[in-house]
Length: 304
Image (cartoon, rainbow, N blue to C red; front, side, top):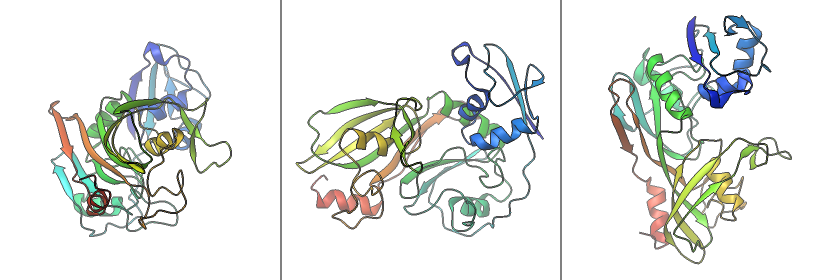
């Protein structure tokens, strides 16, 4: 068992306990947290509580995560593009089309399979047996920088920075339409689409979501952007850009069904990631170069 102890800050008062833990350790799914609560592994001031319990300022939250069983997913010798590595973390440049972690019925060919082979036993176990080392994710067809944690201390540290929104995350994107303003900010909550549950949407009862964008190049039909996340909601940039009438080129879920350039998925690249190193405390920033398909597209659009 691994023990975690936190103190509720005043600004988080009245939040549901399952939601609070989910926001604190973003690598844990809310359903997994609810299972921990059901198994009496979550305590408030040393007393077990229900998932619906509303936390109070300065209460002590203590919960336990069972030791991870040996993963039933295979380590695979899949080449990795490594941007940075030390004894605590690994930062990789995820290619297009690669899923970050296994899911039921899909246990091979993921980033987790690759990092399990590369790191052997040196991966954090907080995320569970299906997500060793995984502290955050990017979509299958999004490319770019992703942090892998090699131990639980690093995992907790990076999770805390994610929750505090202090990690620098800059993306490059190509969207439909001319954007006259050189920069802007989209502040709109994101939650499950009430009509299509597999999609996300801007919705009044969603979680706060803020995306800053800067126009790097723009033409009559397309715009090339740098997007910086202040929050990190599922599909955030894709949903936000679609909500203002500029969906990502290639995004068949939130944009147009067909792409004029025969693209596979959205033109979105996680270019820059910066954070305080979990051991040294020094700021570390890593940049993933634009993938070849992206630079080729920029050339076709005369954005180079």
